[in-house]
Length: 194
Length: 173
Image (cartoon, rainbow over all chains, first blue to last red; front, side):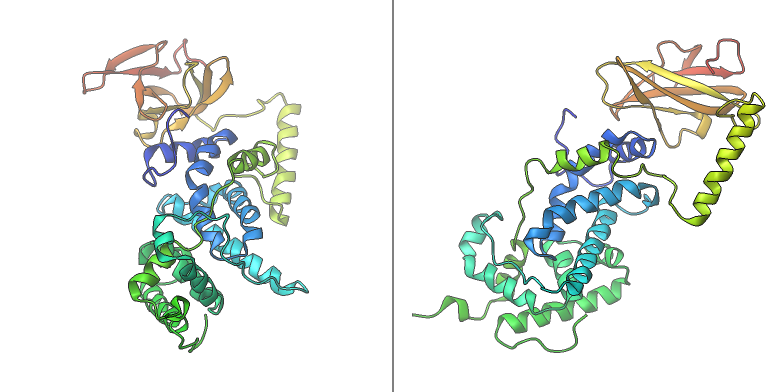
């Protein structure tokens, strides 16, 4: 492609054309979709699983998307559908990790991750405190916080990705946010975890 | 001196930390590695039959039917009853994608042409006998008539559509 594909609007005509070409058997048409959404998929997965698994699960997400492209319905944004797959891959990894004899903990704040000016202003302590606090939350809370407050998706999209109602997503997000705030401010986790 | 790590964070600080939490880098070769696996055929093509019992049974039935058709001199890919396969083709070496849109499906979903090498793009579409208007759409936005169409008619917007008459002697099948 001669034009950059990352960061363009979702669900545009060109994207639908790429998907149609893939469905018609043109594997190369999947490349611009991977290019466009690689960062987004990494963004979801990196906040739900240990760093060592991110690249592999991101690859698995795209491979699964390609294989099951016939199941994608254009009533949804392609990015939303990809997020659903990414979240499911992270859940699968959590289930597999529970079956492994030695569980890996969450990674510490890693310098391989980008740090923008705002991060520097906030200081690394905040990043480390957020990770430590999120590690105390359940997987459901983490998914909600990642999709709503990190990826900054709307509640309708969050609900669609997680397969729940908009109302339930709002309530769960508020509770997860409150649990996070309590942990961060020394109150500890309370209430049930998702 | 206050310990920065122990103080309470404001809602704004929590928001900012969440937004910038662990923003991952994507490896430079990530896209290439994914595409290498896809292009190597590691993944099944979209719409590939799932290996479930019913799918296997359906596959066996299709093979038997195809063999029967071949034995009786039938076409390898018969067109649906009352239709003929029409080949749309365009030579456009600089194109990155080509599709055809037309009245045969109410100017609805565009149908992608496949790159056949040396700049040739083609697709075969089953059409019933009749007259249809169509255009090619190059790279998703450049609309152009077929330079080798049977005929042309105004598109009502100052341009022109190509015309094909399915069942005519010139029709490519």
